[in-house]
Amino acid sequence: MKFSAAHFTIFNATERERLHGHNFTVEVDIHARMLGNGMCFDYGIYKDRIVALCRELNEWTILPTRSKYLRIEEAGEHVHAHFNGQCIPFLRGDVLLLPIENATLEEFAYWFLQRLCEDRDALRAHAIAAIEVRVFSGPGQSAGRRMELD
Ligand SMILES: Nc1nc2c(c(=O)[nH]1)N=C([C@H](O)[C@H](O)COP(=O)(O)OP(=O)(O)OP(=O)(O)O)CN2
Image 1 (cartoon, helix red, strand yellow):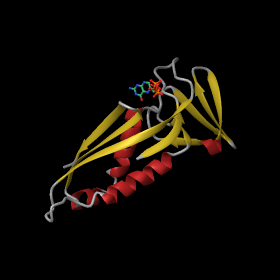
Image 2: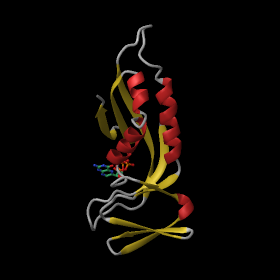
Image 3: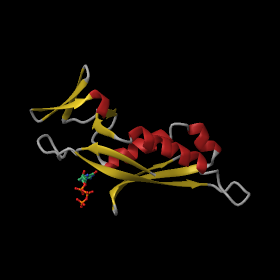
Image 4: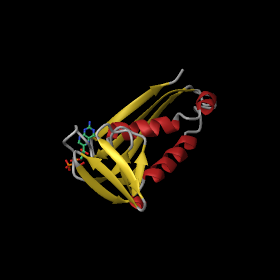
């Protein structure tokens, strides 16, 4: 599955990338017990959820609200991102504020993982033991996060 978005990675209090974008791709590995009938749960259930989550991120400029280096100020129809003494203005209608620490592959993967693991009853019903999400910003360039479930 994929989503297109703009972002910039913040490396420390004074260094960041310029704003740029990617067609990100998302891979999800779900480890689950076989439930008879030659299959585990119907993975289409989670495929639909992942596609819906990709749509949530698609065609936005993504800003992290939990960055220790970026201060976000919402000002009417604008959002001001304050970094290292700079004020970076965006139109409110172009920005998606995500509760992540940085606009990185690791944090995007974690965002997907958190959202997929919200419904713990469903995870138990589908006998899911672990989920790993991997997000790619280009061929062979990715980061993954994994959650083992009790
Ligand atoms: N640990 C991380 N390090 C970096 C991340 C990240 O998400 N986690 N992200 C970046 C850059 O945002 C990203 O790599 C920019 O992509 P870049 O490789 O510069 O451009 P392309 O994907 O188009 O690849 P090219 O080799 O330029 O074609 C940096 N570090």
